[in-house]
Length: 129
Image 1 (cartoon, one colour):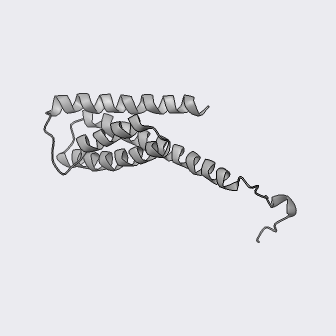
Image 2: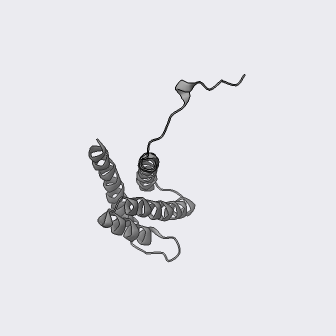
Image 3: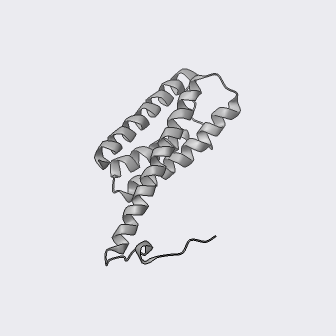
């Protein structure tokens, strides 16, 4: 049975309704950004395990797409340094032209980037409070 709408359920938006919608948009973007960073950190740390080549190819595609999204999200907040870092990481991890660093160096890069993502997530959390 459908719920009837009462006057108490009706919310009147002020002239600042566009501002409220933007706040909600940025809140949702912040939540998605946090999930993307957690996902990326996890798959990068899993690269320390010896997987088949297919997993590393998946990581390269997923990382590139995720870093492009993170660059976009940072640009929406006018964080030019973060935009540059995420674009450089997208170029480093892109799957189309393989950058041969060797397994040991890639492991160092994976751990460093995963730690950087975790630190950035914690600093974003402190700034939002």
